[in-house]
Structure formats: C-alpha cells, structure tokens
Image (tube, rainbow, N blue to C red):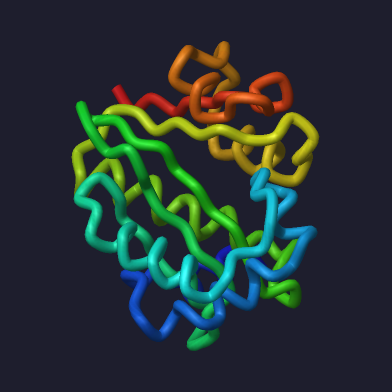
Length: 169
C-alpha cells in the first residue's frame, strides 16, 4: 500500500484555492490541539496570516493532495543559514492513519535537501502527540534539548514541547 500512496501524494504550492478548506480544518479543536493552537481563527485573521506567510521569504507553504483532493498542508519556516523548521498536518480526517503524512514529509524533506540545499531540519512537537512523534522518529528525527529560541517561541508551553532535528550532512 505504501508504494501506491507514493504515486498519489503531491505537494503543490499553497494558493488561494486552499485557503477556505484550511480555514474549515482549523475550526476543529482536536486538530488545533495537536499543534498547540489555542483558539479557532477568525476569517479575516486567517486571510491576513496566509497572505503574510505567502509573502514571507523565510517560509514555504504547500498544500498536500491525495490524487486531486486537498487533504492537508505542510511547509518550512524560519529558513535561514541552511536550516528550517518543518511542519505538517492532515486536516481531512478521512485520510489520516494511511501513511500519507509520511509520504508527504518525505517529499518535503527531499525538497528541503535537494532544492533548497538545507543541511538541517528541525521541529517542535507536543510531548503527548504520539502519532506525530512516531512519524518523526520513523523519518529519522532525533530529540534534542529545547534551546532558548524554542523556549521563547513556546513560552508557557515549553515544558510540554520537544525539539527534534534531522541533519543532512
């Protein structure tokens, strides 16, 4: 089944076509909880955030498609000094648990390494997000101590956040 999924997952640069579905997914409290998002966005703030993100040269955002269905989003942020933070989520509940996040992550990792020539990817994940931790472990990410930057980003939640890295060199 994994080989079949490889053919059907594509990453497309995030566009206006993906904004509404993403907004709908972020109304789901369970999804937001997985990546420590406190409350559902309002439409205007959502549009503002997306526009800002797409204009930010230190970020790249992709829509994840299974065949022709938008099922999630992923991307890279804080791109600098040959490093970046990686993130991913599947918003469409019907496609979770099928190995599709792993396929999308592998594509994103390959893009980071081959197209952007990055030397390290890192991420921050909630300690109790077992599904994500299993995914990142499978992909070769290793836990490292949370640094001052991570602590400042996550402020009051830093005790529930793990940092993981995937070096390429």
